[in-house]
Length: 457
Image (cartoon, rainbow, N blue to C red; front, side):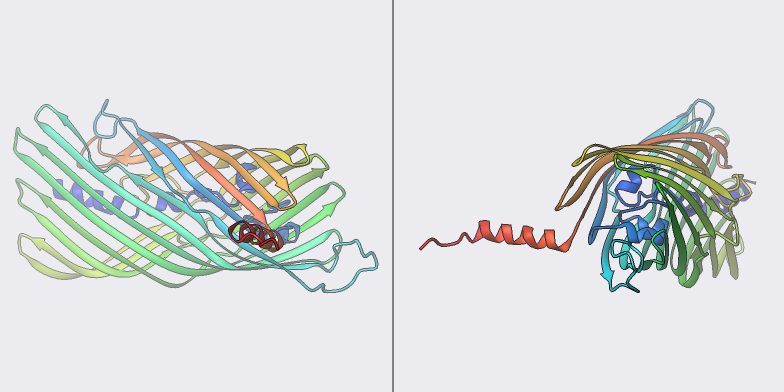
């Protein structure tokens, strides 16, 4: 019975990437957009533009945009993780990269009658950035009650890195269209080790599992913006990505005492961490003193979200028989709607204040001991920042904080697993800048002048 329970725990914990992939705001994009509640579908002007709505690339005035979310602090608390009253809390810190973009002006498509009009302008951008990034770590935790000892080591990580070109053009003074083709590199790794012993009755349980996967896929984003006076409407659609190549590995070891049974499995095969179809709609209002924007994004639950299909060999005792075994893991998501609200207010021409709010509801459709996803967490995000603006460029600093709640499979009835309530809080520090090549050239010349001062006759 214990071997069966441990097998169930193995099935549940084989795909911890599901939680990470189910939160699409797990990495901040751009600097201005991140500090305006991850908004930018209508009025994006930084490195987030090609990822949120490529049509807004026409709004970008800089040549170079860099955003670095250089520090993240997260606190996660799980109630009754091991047994009723045995809580667990984890504090972690991470250095997180964000986006890097280059923007290039292209020759005009046509020359409008009104020379001051933006009609005919077109731009090309090339960007790469981390669009999703999460990690989790309980390693080194344990619980003892009387003669019983329970241990668990859960570690997993998920990252999606995107690179690709974007194109945007002003069809008229009011209408802009854009498109982006992106290559997405997805990597995940996990490790879970569960142990449970009891002196009375001499029962013992062991479970170890390791899995990893990497995937490269292609997707496309189409977008448009329409400006009507002070208002701008933005709309975008992202296609589901197509896997070009994906590979994964899975190894599992299960053992129990008393009955004397054990099982070992190793397999490898295909892996795909898939992005669903997503629609975005934004409404922005711009006036001389600032901007305000309200966005909404809908992610569909089309197809499999995370898929790991392996073929390998299983060794079971007693009997010590080697058998060819196929193990498939498949996680599906539910449709998810998230919203964001952000504003930037100029207190003077060279200084602005940014603030925003956003939801990050998980797309995981519940968790259970018979399912695949190990957790489901919803988050609320709030952000605040300050921007410094000059002819040389823009520098923005600020923070994005969040509060999360949900459930994670824990070991209150070890070695079986059951949903446990969790809460988490965290803060992400953001540093971003935008400039142009002329400003960079002037800065280099100034540095050369300091290093090599001119000789006086």
